[in-house]
Length: 110
Image 1: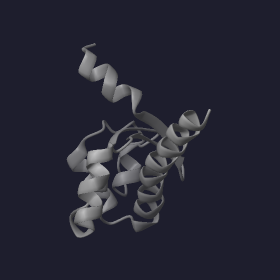
Image 2: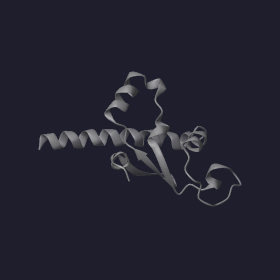
Image 3: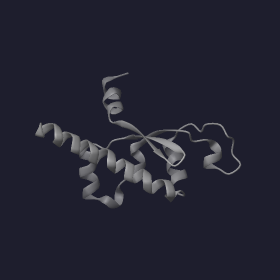
C-alpha cells in the first residue's frame, strides 16, 4: 500500500445506512471549500468509495442475492433513484467532516 493509499484510507469510515454499510472517505478542507463555493455542483457520490451488504437484488428487482461489486458508476445510478438512501448518505458524508473538525479543535484546546 502506497503512502497515498494510506493517507486516503485514514480518512475512511464505515457508516451503516438502512440494511447496507457504505465506506465514506471524509472530504478534505479543500473539498469543503469548493463545495461551499458552489454547492449546486457538489458530488457526494465521490466520497463513497465502497460498500458492504449490497446485493444485486437490492439494486435491481429480481437480481441475484449475491454481493454486488462496488462501482462508482453503479452507486451513482442506483442512488439517483433511491433518495431514501441518498439523504442519509449525504448527511453521513457531511458528518465525517464535521466530526473531524471538532476533533481537531478539541486537540488544539488541550
